[in-house]
Length: 320
Ligand code: CDV
Image (cartoon, rainbow, N blue to C red):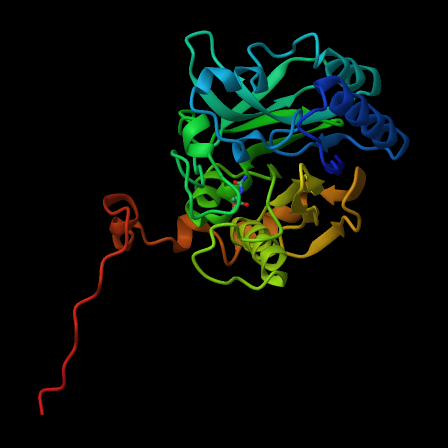
């Protein structure tokens, strides 16, 4: 049985603060049409794909930001996406801000089967930035204010895709920089990691200089090493371009289990990149150098779970 599937990253250009969900959803439906024309089986949209990246805007009263969140999925606003997925028989990954019935807020992603059923939900674990207004920063990054830490772990599920089955998992943006997150997925034999991101072209933290070209380099390095070290495909989809005056770097990629980039976006706008992926290509790494059962040494990894921050090592001094 062929285990070839066609994966797509559906990069979005900027969504301005003043634009409604209908604008974003219309653009996303057009990308789904394009995906259908190119024989795509799974489309991956970015993190917080329905709105501007609102955590850059400070609100004293968090309830004032409530209009950025989805309280149901699908909703009237997102129904056209679910309809397009069904019409074209395409699986869809969607990132959005979630507000639960009991008032909890998460940075969330779902994977939707073409029938419209939600197969998998993930809530972002690694929330970058800060909770209170930071006068040092040129631009705020208030994910710690607007979201709780995800409470679903890093789930992986086996789901039907294009006549075969694939083990799928998700990360969201900053998660891609944490090898622990990838490894938890790898330990569940993930074959396809879907992840969306909104990453500014400049480090706005302003506590030191970071060369601009390294921003993209670090993003790609993280995804490529995550895929290689866990023998999986990765679809990393950006929001790009100048959003409300702030530049996001785009550069969406699809990566194979060797850590090679199979496709890369070249614009900062709406752009669909695709790659035909043989899921059996995940087997080589998994059965050789990254055969976890044969080679992992959990007895030496205690600190990973016992310690959060780093500690200074003991100091060696010469005896003589
Ligand atoms: N949305 C994000 O998680 N962005 C972070 C930025 C702020 C560093 C990222 O890791 O790309």
